[in-house]
Amino acid sequence: MDVSSQAITAREFIKQVGRLTPRRQGNSIPLHRPLLLLWLLGRAASGAPRLVYWREVRPAFEKLAANYGNGADGDAAVYPFWVLHANNRLWEIEDPERLVLTSGGRRPTRASLDAVNPAAGFPQATYDLLVAKPEVIAQAAANLLVRYFNPIPDGLLADLGLLHLIAGHEVEALAPIPGTDLYDDRAAIYEAHGGQRFAGIGPLEDGLTCLFSDEKGPYSDRRIPGTGLIEYRGDGLVGDQRLTGGNSTLYECQRQRVAVRYWHKPHDEPWRFETWAVVVDRRRVWGKGADHKWRREFAWILAPVNSPFRDTWTLQVQELLAEDDGETHDDTAGTEAPAADNPDDARDRYQKFCDSVASRERHNRGRSTRQQSDRYFRSAQARLAVLLRAEGRCENPECTGQPEDLTDKGDPILEVDHVDELAKGGRDHPEAMIALCPNCHAIKTRGKSRHVLRRKLKLEALRRHTKWSAGGTDTPKILAEEASSHEV
Image 1 (cartoon, helix red, strand yellow):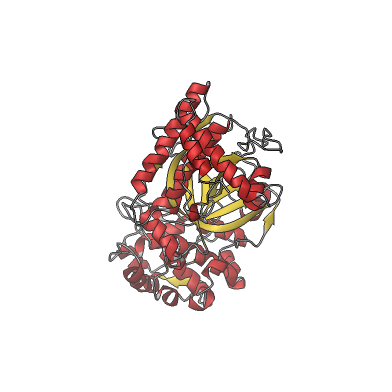
Image 2 (cartoon, helix red, strand yellow):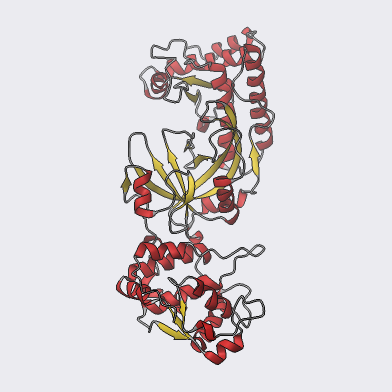
């Protein structure tokens, strides 16, 4: 009997479960191996004997496969029964050399299994671990459920013998739990949960994908104002990003609508697993690489969810997913990178950004619904135009702060704001937007003189837009009409 008598830890077992990755066949993933492993976990949870004979496995598993599997046939139990044996930390078969293999040598014949009727089960060390620690059974079962049976089919947990162990507690069984633990650095996360030490996109040792976002960069990740969504910049430090590596992994999560763990590190604070999230949009945007050069980046739009199980997601998230066509929406099309070598180039690029914003406005006019991210990225194009126009300085002509200060990354400390709030009818266009230093922005938002300042900023935004979009010539008539409308 092929027995692994070496001790095994809970982390090692979860790692083995996380490595269980059936190959996709067309648009589906065969569920034979995860289903059999769940059945074995249910037996351990109920205190059933470690070993079970083939003639008992076959009818029990084929009934499960018929109800919860995909593409099950009359020999549904043969393949997982044999293949799990390849990893003796998960499964072992008594006297496998007595079995007759098929002509291709890939598995035993069913006739041979029926004749020999071998006993099989978890290795002794693994079984002892699971019986002693039911929480390990719960974690392994929750891992398999979220990856392969999501949402959980009615009756599955009862038929597996796992109902009393994890029903209603599937999310809590998936360690770590959002918001519970803090980690000084990525090395501390690796020591606690495995995975990768540096990559921005990748799994922990349990096989579930994680996204890591550090406010210090090098990527420009952020919460999207007024939406509750997260903008996560793609993988790749230099040059235009491509759908390879981590971006390819995230693309598969988007296509399959699989939730990911979102890890966040605020400035000068520890890392934390902040929330589960699901990709609801993918965009192509302008951004700066690690070499400080402008390039095209992927902006992955994430909707936070309280659970990786799809049937718990809110109606709002479901609507965003329904609107997602799975395509890359290119917000760089028809525009050029914001950097320019001379004023004429800058004005030309400013106009192209404004044209892009106006085109999106026309496209969205009259639509009953629009994605929150689509509305935001119309604003993002306008934001780039305003930053280009500001040339690194606060646009408040009466600024008394430090209008030319820079961030650690060498970018201007400017915040682009709508002079009139969008909720009150303000236009999402550079002519009604202004770049302000943090001090002027605070005064405009909550200062005692904010009402007077807003009127001045509205005129200044229009003046600057008119100058840039008209090749350097002001339009006094427009400005005079705007000024007279605000006389007090």
